[in-house]
Image (tube, rainbow, N blue to C red):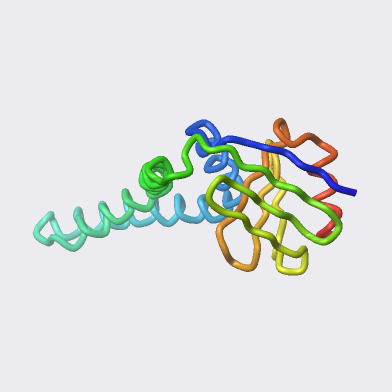
Amino acid sequence: MQYETTFKLTKEYYLEAYKQRMYSMRKRRLFNYSIGILFMLSGASLAIYSKFNNIDPLVIFLSGIFLLFSSQISKFIWLRRQLQNNSINEEFSILVDENGYKLTGPNSSTEQSWKVIDTIIQTPSGILIRPQKRSMIYISEKLAGKEFIEFVKSQIN
């Protein structure tokens, strides 16, 4: 059995892919937010305790702010980098069968066996395929269809 879908790498695709990736990392983000708030409170407490005579509490406080907003900062940097690459607005196709998947674009083609896939992460809008600690591939359910998504998930589980 084979399934195939095509998609364009547009700004909307990248924004949706980033949003789904962040959804898959929600526990890590919650941890970062908690540590950021803890740093901010610690920095403010130390500043009051030292009567604002030391710069260390300010550094701790600013570290907390950075942790709090790090996902937004990384989104901006990641999206800018993706939009500058040569494959923006290019059409890609992904073909899946019992052996693996083949991702084909105008300048490249990648073929992977299901054996090298570490995890498939279900998100509200599709799936993220993660081959052996490499970058994830996002497949939207509205573009690929439910049958496509279920077939891919059945190959790993």
